[in-house]
Image (cartoon, rainbow, N blue to C red; front, side, top):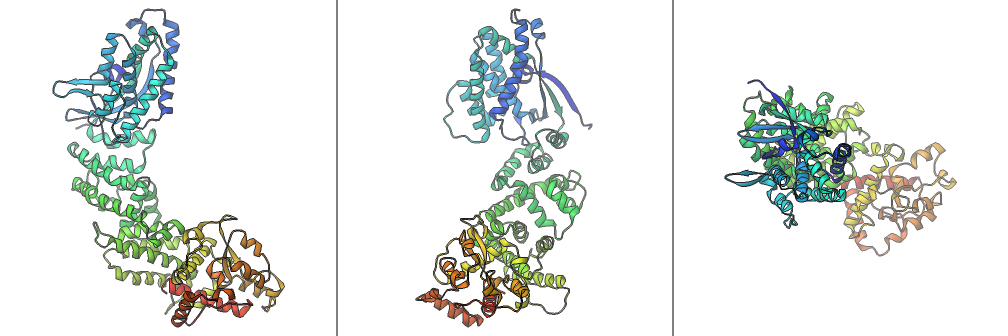
Length: 613
């Protein structure tokens, strides 16, 4: 059958009188703002008033009305299926016109116009009685209250109901403020019904997904996930659209505000296993088109009209995959797990969503354990990449994609081996070495310092050190990990402090100025100080700095002799730590090369315990 688009020029009268429109699943809720409605009313009245001033003394007739300027209301698009007319595009305009007609219905005392306006608000059905012109099944209650002029006393079931009530109030206030006498009001009603022009385009069902996307490309563009819904559900039989549209909406509301991120992460989790710009780029920007194009991902999904069983594939995706993975995505985002929080809100590792979705099967009974374990492993992976100085964003992204391939079908107890293998492989490639390498050896650790390490990472590293000490010594943290890692203000933020200040006493501990500048930057020679404490310590002598350190974080306070007085919980922790690692916390009255080396080794051993190296 040839595809056709049939245009039909209409007035508001012919468009609304005794018509019943259904709102297709493509359409948004009715969401026009007060400003948008007022712009429309201003434009309509500007055109009307120019003509009315010129012809107000003439008795209204069809001939006089023809002299009035017409106002073009743009195109609306419909799709007739099984005797029902669905709005594909133009719901916002048509809904607003029915609200204007309702207000005019309340204002006029002309019995003829009163009857005509009523027929533009609802149609009469011999079986169902009065049916409101637009989306009666969903709007009947709220439109009846507006028509009756009574307050809507029910809880709004959706955004459309709320907007209809609000916009009718705006329209009512606007028209009341016009203070039109009976003659001008009558003229305006004739003008509204007959000189506002719309063009209806009636399209065949098979054209609908394509035309809808084109419409939204040229107008107020829908987001990719909204177009994807139209493309997928538009391929189903009309008898299935309401059911699967509801299923889609019930699923997608779980990721409200992050819908496009969800689909991008889902597709990456299932199909992208290495960096490939030719695939990544369209998935990131036009996935709603890419999966209907001709490529490997589209072939595997088989949603296209030409694909065998495309109907069943779409239904399966909506019923099973979309339903489960939106639940999972929301669960990850709302998780209170500390490692999920570290990854998403401190270190910005959004690939966590992909890796967890890749690892979980639909309705996975072990999903909670997988979320916790993958989040912990992702944090460990990132820290060891940075401390081994093998981190760069492209390589880390590549490893994340590789995990999308390696995690599916594996038990949680296998994850540590998978992550370790990737860390070792990356270290070997970056250093161009073969044979055995350590996950983190001390000499390479010493090469990481203040000058070659991201400051936010350093704040995070020391925040985790702080948490570990406090957790094991029954102390409350001064601030939590997120706060310490992310706050940077002069008064409330945490700043990197060099224990070895720029002064002659400290320089004399080293053989040269170059050695001093290099060694003072070592991680073991750093602590965090809050706010102006960092500045106030300045270039003071070490013994004077201890006064500041004694009021700061525990990692810095452990430098001070007074910290160890009557602190039995810490003493027990320190003994236990020494028995496991051979190293212990101790105070320093002088911070020289020996102290720096010992402190660096202590930090290294802490990191190994915290990140299980």
